Every structure is written in C-alpha cells, then in structure tokens.
Amino acid sequence: MNTFVQHYTKNTLGRDFAVGDIHGMFSLLQTELDGMGFDPSVDRLFSVGDLVDRGPDSELCLEWIAKPWFHAVQGNHEDMAIRWPNGHMDGGNYAANGGGWNVANTPDSQRQYADALGALPIAIEVETAEGMVGIVHADCPFPNWPDFIWALSNESITKNMRDRVIDAAMWSRERIQSEDQSGVEDVRAVIVGHTPLKRPSVLGNVYHIDTGAVFREGYFTFIDLATLETIPAMPKKLDWEAV
Image (tube, rainbow, N blue to C red; front, top):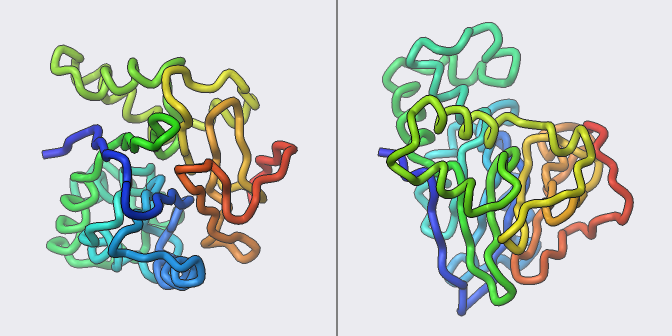
C-alpha cells in the first residue's frame, strides 16, 4: 500500500542531504558519500527519484531502499518499472529508456522491483530549522505545497484526479522549460530532479539538482537541506540545457 506522502522530523543529530537522479549509479553514489564524510549513523540522504535504468547498478535499488538512512520518492523511471510487469509499458520504449536490465529479468524479479518501487511515496516533507523542505521528482503541480499534499492525501479526491497529479509530479518539465520563477508557496524550498542539467539551478524556491550522473560528462549534485547550498556550488545563471 503506497503512502503518497512521507514526513520526516528535523534531524537533530546529523546532516540531511538530497541528491539528484541516481539511475543505477549506486557505486559512484557511495564513493561520493564517502568523500563527503557522510555518517549513516546520524546523517540522512533523500533521493528525488529515478533510482533505476541506464546505469550499471540498477539491481541494487532494493538494497538501498532498505537502508534506514536512505529515503526516496518515485520518479518516472520507477513509474515505468511499475507499469512493465502489469502490461502497461511498451517493451521497446522501456528498453530504449534504459530499462533493458529489467526487461531481461524473470517475471518474479520484475514483480519484486515493481512492488518495492511502487511502495515509495510521491512526495517527501523534511523539517529543518528554517522551515519545511519538499521533495518530489519532477515538479509540484500546484502554486502552493499544502494543496499538493492535500491532493495526494485526501480520500475525497477521485482516483482519476489523483493520477493526474501524480503523473505531473513524476513527469512534468513545464516549470524548467518555461523558466518559471514563480516558485511554490507555503514551503521553504522544493527539491526536484528529472531534467538533466549541466549545473544545478533554482527557479523561485524550486531547486533542480539532476546533473546527469549517469551520463559521460554528468555528476551527482547534493543539496544540504539545512543551508540549501549545493555540492558543487550552484551558479547564478540558469542553465537547464540537457547534458
């Protein structure tokens, strides 16, 4: 059973980071965390989703999901992995988008991945000393964060309407393509991935941190949720051209 929103209280013992799209690059991610002095006994890592496809270690997603300090939302590549064993995903399209590792899996393995990834939330809220930070894969499709959370959580919402909200949260590129600076109200910041960038960028209070670690000239971007400073540092000029 999916809980569409997960809420985390303030980390009073260590640090909280979010990381851009992983895409099966878990070995590189671990190397980067080691270099940052990440302490899994007190620190937490939040993922903007797209744990799988394209990279060499996609099968490790189950191992990472089980780590008590690692917390991820669903991305569009999780969506494809969930659709595939249910017969709602074209195999050629899936493989072309990096899902060949899963197409080759046994039906039982495909179902195991689909069930585990399908249990991930659509949105995460993290409390910080300066206010709430929201995490979602592609975008918050509402002008304010509470309406987004209400649409995901309220039982009176029809399935069709909730599905449309979830689809936008996992797939939309409207904000970054239009360079929409309006931001999202009633939340300190929203952290997203989905669109690979040459450098991390911010639009209003929406931080785009997918810098294409799976691609040849890409790399992981982290953001410290306490300070909203990125590693590496964010340039002043928006540059969302895909890597």
